[in-house]
Length: 107
Image (tube, rainbow, N blue to C red; front, side):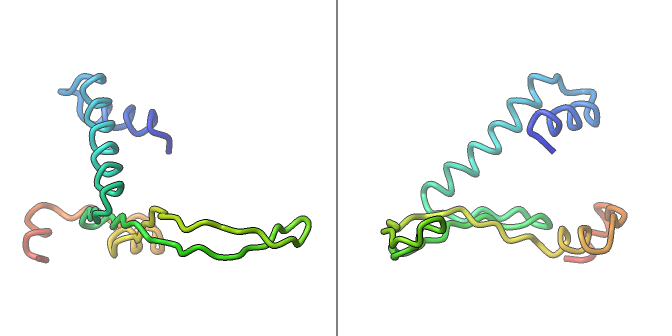
């Protein structure tokens, strides 16, 4: 799903919101996740997963084409770990959404 498809689906599911407002909401959420990760913070979305930043040390790599040694600088990379509910939905097919009362009872 692309960002524009996400916006279109959210607009269709929420007819009381204007398409421009939905676009601003989605962009703001993505920006906040990006800014938090750039500060080295962890972002957790319950039932979906967690975004973190992992640091990779400098190392000596190999050019796969020539086999020559290549110096690879240290870097930080974003990492996503899927939450339990997301893993269950992906592995077992779509499961029905829990009602707010069921979610409250489960916690």
